Image (cartoon, rainbow, N blue to C red; front, side, top):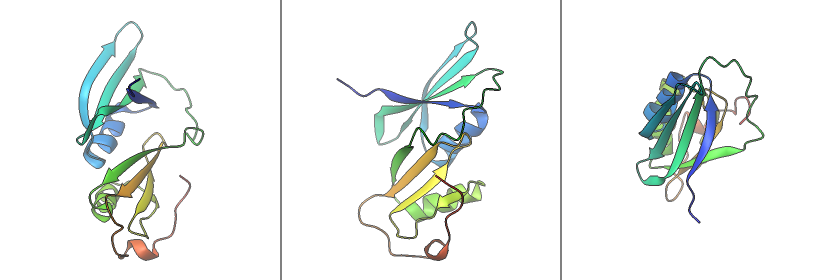
Length: 140
């Protein structure tokens, strides 16, 4: 058996690609537009994990409510510098729901409210401001 991908439905493909690619650093692997089914599939992968893909599914013109995505759980990514990644996402306008106060773990949400866990590679970084005193925001 081989793991292939996780699929997430998205409301705004451009906003989602900005979040996952520009924000998190994933890269588009391939794309499929289906005119008859009126949907686009975009497969993304992290540079260090090319075989574990994230499939973004955009249903053209759909106004379906995908809910808060709490029933899904979360996606997790290991990052080289959790403080730099959170600062980058915050500069893009992303809310840091659970700041990396411990230098090890943070949570953010995608434009479609999918929880994303960020984990520091290796040992936790020493506590640093503004993260050490930043409160949680919302839910993740």
